[in-house]
Image (cartoon, rainbow, N blue to C red; front, top):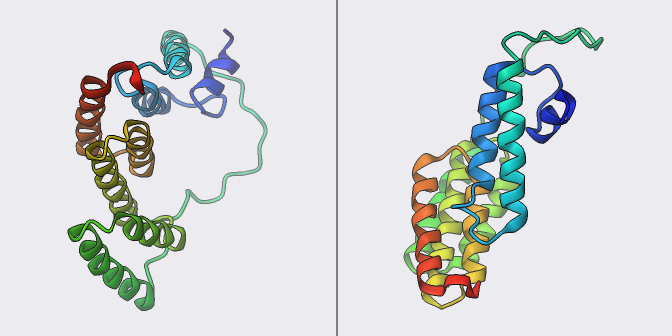
Length: 188
């Protein structure tokens, strides 16, 4: 495996820093870890490739300095998203109240439609992504109670994808995955 492949596996541009490599590895390892994807052979193989690519880059990076790749001059660093307009703030507030009602009365399909629409309207909003993840997790737990383990697993994955940096969500999802494995074993 050459360095270019290592960067590609870690979904990084060639010449990324050691800190970027470590961050990408942690993010992808959580996504493809065998404990999160029990029985998924492709995820397991991807996890092994990630591990190998990471180890190679960590060994080489402190001493290796790639030749600079000619690119367009860097302008300013990426700007944070612009603040929400008054309309968007009110939309978010009203949507949150409605989402709470939907979740309270277990109207999960409506809640999912609401947060997905809001996420498409406000894709950079961290709170909306968190609401989306929580909604998916609630629906996954309902699916577990309804004895639909495959669908529950799918919505747990969606929750983790919606808010991948939420450690508490990862812990709760891992518990749910273990519960699914304990209740349904290899059935799913």
